[in-house]
Image 1 (cartoon, helix red, strand yellow):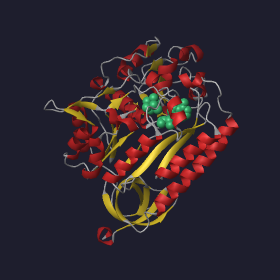
Image 2 (image 1 turned 180 degrees about the horizontal axis):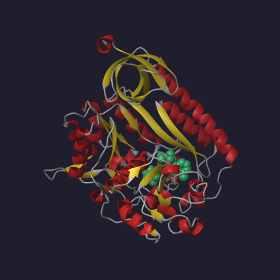
Image 3 (image 1 turned 90 degrees about the vertical axis):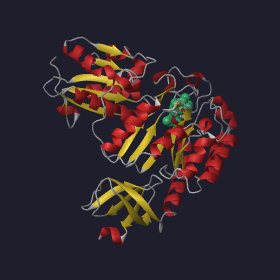
Image 4 (image 1 turned 60 degrees about the horizontal axis):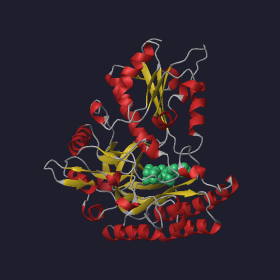
Length: 441
Ligand code: 5AD
Ligand code: SF4
């Protein structure tokens, strides 16, 4: 196989994976490869996979099959991400056309693995070195107005349903200086908003440049001081790591946006225990109350799993109850999916699929209703919108409100501008607005 000249990275799953996909693209570009618009046009295709739910592994195999071209040839194929980590050598055994298998902690080695594959040697690396891969990655190269910045990876919490501690490994925090430097570089390249990423982002800990111990709130305050940056966000958080300092930051760091994604997963204390969540419904609600006291307009988001093994009808009702108690601005909800190797997959009384379907529908109906109510309450407000991309109609741009709502508006302003907007209409998934007259002039 020849050395590839073009590549295409296809990312699935969470924002961390999207970030990793972008870093892999930067890494390949630094090696002189050019990005191809789609997999069909690329000499090298990287499938950056997700393993958190569903039959993700099965999907990878059908995607691999589809990469075969009409003339019978195929591109060089790399499987990256969490399926690569979980399945490892099993992947080339089942799909011999795969040339490279690279886990989330090893992708800085992609260029040498591509070189091996070009020599006809299959390359596999799913090591999880303690040493961070970040030091081995090239500097950031491109940037739109909104940027992701990984500050923490991995998870030590071992929720019984979750594959992340196995695919992403133990919790590690990137060093303070590396993060602040990367933030500066992103801002220089045009980022106006930075979202700090981590599987347990609020578990981030480190030392600042004076050697003082810091948590995520310290990092947020350091970013707050960087000129040119307008907005800071972070995701995803664990309820147990919502420190007093972080809650306080929501009250007094102006650039920190009023939005908190704080998964609770279930409203039943018995189920939370079986999930090994190490928080209760009461402690979760207490955190929400304190966050709201610090920042009354904060939008709360969450994750939910329905149909965890043994979940009774009454326990599912408790989940609806906690949703009513919190009143979410938006949330994600999923049917429980047994992940090979996790304790919950071995539990008895797995819930029937049709019961899960029915519970998910009821939960989502309630969450959609709350989201619509939250969006409708924005109508008539004046707020700032960071313009991110073009809309479908000519002259239309789409941006985000401070509460992470998509706002559509017609404006002469440019992508990357922060504009003052009157919110005029609301649907379940987006808002319509108009720029203030002074600005439009
Ligand atoms: N089944 C269903 N949902 C899951 N999640 C994680 N693991 C599973 C699973 N096995 C959900 C959780 C988590 C989100 C990222 O994905 O709600 O917060
Ligand atoms: Fe998975 Fe729980 Fe860790 Fe989140 S906290 S990544 S759900 S084990």
